[in-house]
Length: 136
Image (cartoon, rainbow, N blue to C red; front, top):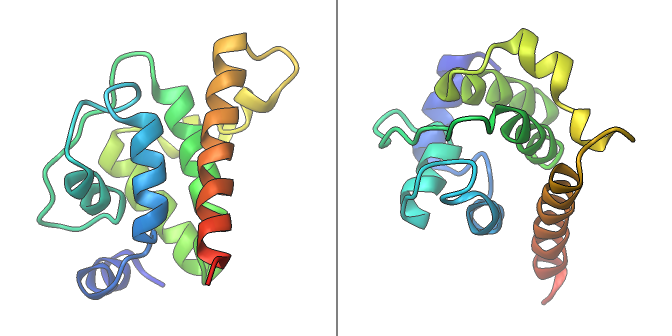
C-alpha cells in the first residue's frame, strides 16, 4: 500500500486501533511525546493529515523507535504496518536509517534499567490492550 493510499484509508478507519492508541498514550504522553489529549494522540498515531503535530521530546528518539516497532507488529495487514512505520517516522522526524539501526536497542542486554522499564511498560500496555480485545 502506498503512503497516499494509507493516508486516504486513515480518513475512514483507524490503522492503529483506538484501544491501542489509548494504551500507548498512557505510557508515552508527556514522557516521549509532548503533552496532548488522547484524541490528538490517536489522530497523530493514525497519521491523519489534519492532525495537530506532537513533538518527540528531547533524547526520546530511541524509545519512540521501540514504540513504533512494537505498535507496527500489531497492525494488519502487514503491508499497512510497513507504510505506517515509514509515515509515522517521517512525522516524528526520525530517519529510517536511525530506526533500522536502533529499534531493538532497548531489548539488548546492555540496555539501561530505565530503557528496560520503558520496554516493559510498552509491552504491558500492548498485552493489556490485546487481552481487553479478546474479552466479550
